[in-house]
Image (cartoon, rainbow, N blue to C red; front, side):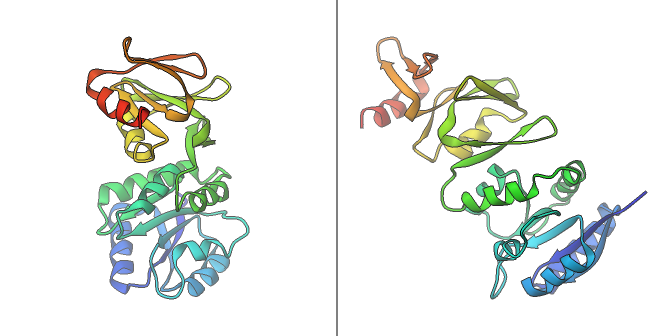
Length: 246
């Protein structure tokens, strides 16, 4: 069986040793070809070894992980970010469909990230998703949506609404496009609803407030600009009306 080649980039020697140990114990089909303690060493190692996976620490002295990626015109390796910071950057990783691991590393998440990497190594969208990640570092303007064996990149301003369908979500996009994603509506609520562009109005619906045409307080119903009607449930009505009538 051919092993997947990788390098580890982290300024902390203990972090590099711990990740190497976890890979050897739980992901022994991943071969660590080299380690790098800073961005300059990492650039040399990537050019020399041409790894399929780069485990990349986000915060490092002098230059960080994002600065490393800017050194390459094309990202032809799969990136798994490793970070101790559970903040907005993590949300940016999620919407760009970039894998990440929080320190201390949980073995189950490591195994999941490796499994996903195996499935995606053959695809050519790494550079596109890295660019998307960079675009989203201040405010989420685009998201990567799993589509067939790849990803569709969608502007958040083009999302009309998101509908719950049991364990799935249906994203309704401008021009009658739809994407069904194997994620609960609560996932998109956590990603998008702290941005006032999106609000949950029903246990089954999130809407883009910029797509509202009319709201009937009596009928507890929103008509979107697409002429589609969405109910407003009692439990979400107050929060919606505060926003709508502000």
